[in-house]
Image 1: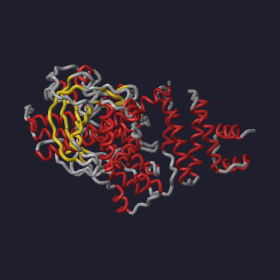
Image 2: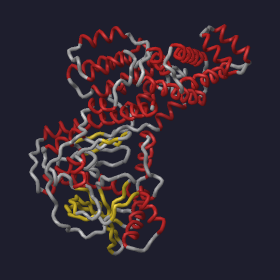
Image 3: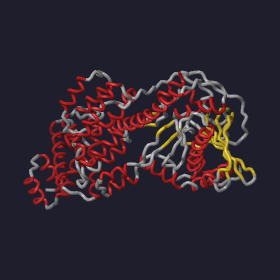
Image 4: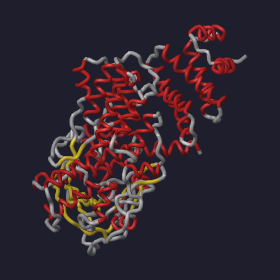
Length: 580
């Protein structure tokens, strides 16, 4: 009888005592690590072809029981921990995809069992509980918390499921007070749930809550019962208050073109929403680069329906099969810097030498016409071809200057690499054309913020604290293995919005902003209102400082919410796609 047939029969019989496992290993002449591998292979065949009947369900449940028992008995080295993390993921995902369309409490329990397996037993789970509570109190990024939980899954059940209990009661408070923190806490509850939580206790508290019969209460109810993914994609958008059909509104039209620069835009292949364009001209030994950003605020009245709906949707998020948007399609088309069309911009002119030194800069309002809308790949082809017409020479000059800017701030480059690695951002970093866009949009965000700071006008700045988690762990005296060290070395802390210019630790700037994406992100759009009222002094926006501070708080909360929404939406869409 083959080893596959033997492990299948062992799983089917379901007797997993120590003696039975020992006898199986002796009969098959395998050690426990090999038995774990055989169990995984047998399970993978079954979970990839789930049949919803008692016989096949019991085989999967038995197999997962055995897999968990073997993992508990084994001590894994670093490489084996990573191998088994991948195995667990490959077993859970098809089960979760099946459960999206089928009700099966046995498979739900099995999936939750997999999520609770402890692989690395060297880390002190009690210390991790203390650390994670501190991260939760700081409203730290869920992805960071998840990484620390994965160090030792025993953390989930330590001290009578302390972490779940801690977050559950924070969720109850958020429900009662209608706090926007509820999005964050519900996401954490999904992360911290284990099959060992006291369901009756939490259901009783939920039943006694005054906040009943809403989508948040329903989702918490599902989580308590082990269902971590209970909403479909439409319900997820509803939960986060996203408007999918945004009504149109009136736009203020631009005047005729008054800028004669040769301007190009560089975007992804599928992009049709163009916030920015670039131009360059030579003046002796100096270069004057124009960074032209769509002036949406000059076309949309503040506190109009278009403005308020953009504030609600907040950010253009690209998700699996769809995207959210700030403005309706017609308005996007009217504001986007499409070639051949007259458009309003807020232009930053930067005077540079060929070593990337900033000699001067200033901003002004413009009416422009973009000469060419290029994709990254089209501009890459131009750079590789090295042609002699004006547009091709301009793009080559832009690359030369972008490379010079890049070399002047190594810290910035390291920061961007850490961010993209941490967030798994799809990008074109290997392309020369991406260097152009990345450097000049970053320069725009820096110098617009510096202009606002020097002028002493209200503005939304982007700030970032120094990484503090490593120091916290050191002060706790917590043991740090190679896996934990890797997490610490690659921690990316989210930046925040502030009314006060201060350090952006990752970039090393004392002032920075989000200003280059006004068609995709609300703070960029709102900053244009502030520039018009206080810098250009051509618009009256009824500014109130207290309301401004409230808006910044909202922007910080909404940024977190929509990051959670995107992750939740993509997981759900992936599971539905996998089921099909």
